[in-house]
Amino acid sequence: MAVDVQRAGDYSWYLHDIWMLPLQIILVLAILYKNDGIASVATFIATIISIVVTVPLAKMQEDYQDKLMAAKDDRMRKTSECLRNMRILKLHAWEDRYRMKLEETRHVEFQWLRRAL
Image 1 (cartoon, rainbow, N blue to C red):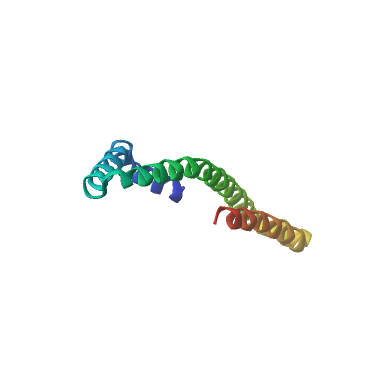
Image 2 (tube, rainbow, N blue to C red):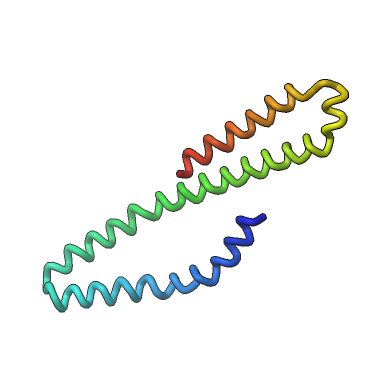
């Protein structure tokens, strides 16, 4: 939930990127053209190529982040369930079985974290 609140708070900052990013690119290219002339065309081409390459990578990063958050939610749900029912787990001596299940969910979360980073 803290991550969701953080994203909602950051939304207002990122909202301005919709109009600011194209404006910044146009201004930079205009300044480059004024100073360097026709050589600024190479910069424009490099900018377009970097944007085209970045879009699929950003989508892949977003997918990994979503899967990481799902794995983290699953781990937290299972951990809180174990803590709420600790008396029953101790009574039936199921500590090791549930510890192994929690470690498996932590391992899955760690794998998605490694991929996301």
